[in-house]
Length: 248
Image 1 (cartoon, helix red, strand yellow):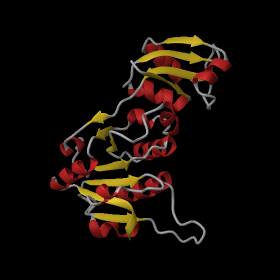
Image 2 (spheres, rainbow, N blue to C red):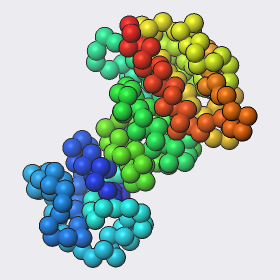
Image 3 (cartoon, rainbow, N blue to C red):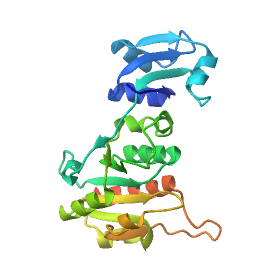
Image 4 (cartoon, helix red, strand yellow):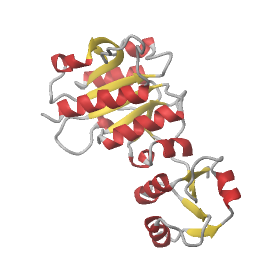
């Protein structure tokens, strides 16, 4: 079974609380560890704990900020889906999903997951290839959201989006088109929506753009900065969308 070393309070606490992994061992630098919640969960789940040197901890964490704790745990895998019907979750409210098109940077991926979980977006779609893995770095950047978020992989994103539109989902792209302030002219508060973010530099691929029924962009007012990175843009788009759809 493939494993990884999670580091830092929030990713470890999220992993233990979500309980979607197999846990092997909890490593600490001090016998009296300051995060009681983590210790209580480890004891409750009968996870072996071990005190090790700071040097070993830093090796496991690749010298990244670890707060004196490492959890050896199985890797997460996204859910593989083929039918847009799988996107529906419980509740009679509008559904909002994020689709990330070949976002390979773990910092951007993790930040989008954190935003999506914070706003309680229904889930995140990723392609089965050319995407950042659900790594320990993504867990750290997302502050543990990777363990809570519903992340699904799709083999053929354009086909999936085409099928979703047949089931009356609205598919929108980002980066060009109408200003974000015009969202209400295209969407109704009761609509189910998939919003697509492309990778930095390349944007959304042409095959996927063809499936977008509308595109939107964020209006800037600076002569020096002409765009936002995906992490910042996703927060603005998703907050606007979630607020609008929640009015249904």
